[in-house]
Image (cartoon, rainbow, N blue to C red; front, side, top):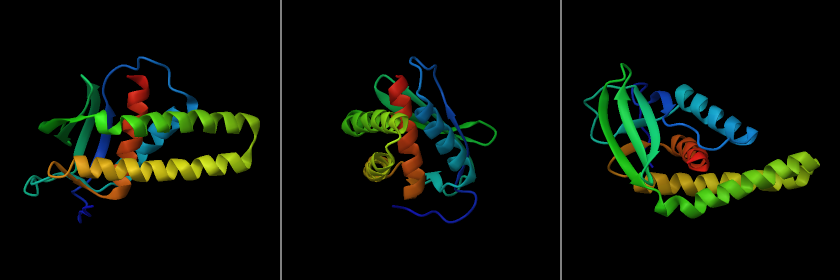
Length: 163
């Protein structure tokens, strides 16, 4: 985990590129919107080895040919660096995330508070595992902290649901 000091090493905007092929649930939409807001409000992020290039940054995310594409740009939307990340290592986590979202929505409909809390604990653990994998897979490409990686993992899961 890399903690980046300085207000310039952060994201000011996250853009999710591509059209939705399926309709997102209300929980997935809320998760996506909250993650995007949180990343713009507070994040620790920069392309690795780009200390000389000042931030903050805009991040365009898309899924293309089975890969998560991170397109990092200046705040003037000028491209800095882009790369793809294979989704294979994330597939089981993404599948588990989808199952947890479905279980959560069902528990909310049924008003089962204890079940909702248990599912929330599972979601937190899953986010931690996904964020750790994201940090590992992006090592040498992007420097970020764990909370930023958790939010990006949320976006990856939501994007995969619509791909």
